[in-house]
Figure (cartoon, rainbow over the protein chains, first blue to last red):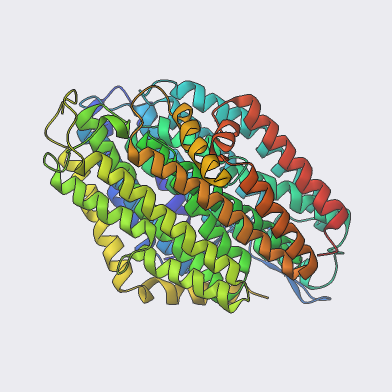
Amino acid sequence: MNELIPLMVIVPMMAALLLSAFSKFNKVIKCLALVVGICLPIIPLASNYGLHFFGGYQPIMDNVTNVIYHPAITYSFDFMQQIFIAMIGLLTFLVIFIYLTKYKKASGSYLFLLFMGTAAVTALILTDDIFHMFVFFEILALAQVGIVAASSIDYSYEMALKYMILGAIGSPMMLLGIGFLLAMTGTVNVTDIVSIIRGGLLDVTSPVFLLSLGLIFFGWLYASGLPPFHTIKSGIYSKAEPHGAALLQSFTVISMISIVLIMFRIYSTLPIFEVLVVFFSVVAMILGVSMALTQTDFRRMIGFLAVGELGFIGLGIGLGTQYALTAGLFQALNEIVITALLFIGFGAIVHATNEVDTRKLGGLLAYHPKVGIMLLAGGLAMAGVPPLSGFQSKLMLVQASLSCGYPELSILAIMVSIATFVVFVKTFYSMFLSPKPHDLEVVDNEVPKAMVFAMAVLLIVIIALGIFPDVVTSGISNYVGGLLP
Amino acid sequence: MRLYDQIFNVVKKFKELFSPGPVTNADVSGSITAEIFIIVSIVIASLLLRHVSILLAGLVTLILAIVLITNIPLIPKFKLEQEDSLEKMLFYAVLVLGLIVIFLYWGGNIV
């Protein structure tokens, strides 16, 4: 059943093109979007693990050196890819469901962007080809710009344009780095590059190799929204529609782990790679959470918190042991679900009040108890409160940094979790528990049922992963074991 | 008393931080938490330098602690540098690119 592997990218991409082409037929595109949305999480769960070689070009064995070369663009599908693609599929379905129930007239172009983004991140996590990775990284960046620009929130165009301009610095640098790597190794297949490096055929201390790391690393900072791109990343989350922001943050997390795992395989022989990843992760944690503490716009606050949480993922990857990498990837999976829940929940509050300033809100628990309780659970999960999923991954990260001999990083991780808790308690109190301001009008007493449904589904996933983390961590740990030299 | 006055001035400075609208107790306590968090976390992070040299770690931690505490309030300064201005974002992006390339090109094979 390996034929299903390319379908994980082709299905959302074809759906995107068809939705755009038939955008005039409202009912047709609504039905198509819903059907494809349902299929997206099912395809990866139904597929077997394995490799797919595009064009049918099988690997070639060099009889002299006994090295295997991969002439085709290769997709590699394992447990890690399966769980992340299924999760992104589930999230895409929920976002499409919210969108279709919110608007009577669906926009084919907007649905095109949502599906194209999903196709791009799926390709990013599957690919074993560094140039293929870059192509989908670019498509993803454009889809993200489109999702932000399509939002009806003030200044969304401006923020989308700024993100595109910054991308004009990040993307060419990454391409230049890939070019240097191709020039030195003669291949863009990651497995081939790794075997050339491990075979000692390439001088890893060569300035060109180091420069390629620097340039690809900079492109990765842009893709993942780590400093110096944390401001623009939190900005685009706050200017996108809430359901769009839920999907955007998952795109960011998946592109972050996809690119960093490729870099890890190529550059892990250089200790400086891990130093760089840990350094930028620590800066992201400190800046993200400290900026979140001072925000009064709750969409921006969640944006900064999401950036801070990315630091935890980077910390796991940067520590570089099997346990730490597993913890980092588990944290990534948790962040996708938890942050999506928070964006959708706060989106429901915007829908009900037309207000984003926490100072002008209050007493909402009486109006929206279900949303309030689910948001509280999501916030506690993000802060790492047991027995929710965030607790398990953060505990693993703290243990990993202790066992690597970096107690400072453990202390920092705990401090950031406490500060995240403070941010959330402060915001929850202002919005839900403090007395309702006299001038606050709760415009729409009913929160869309689709939003409540999406939050409930995500909350079930959070609780399930919190109680049974082994379901995911053992599979991820096996996958990570295969990556390490 | 000097430190107390300094902290009191920080609270006054926070008022300018928030856009038009009431400044609530929750906002001020959030900002003070951020202030303390940023100082403590930078000082703790600087302890990681002990893996390079213990003396360097001691010196940098001490200097950073003094510089950070004598320069409070830090959050308004941090917030000013991380606003949505394209010029500032571009400046920091180019600065970081330059630093990464310099650090790797000249120091990549040392660490």
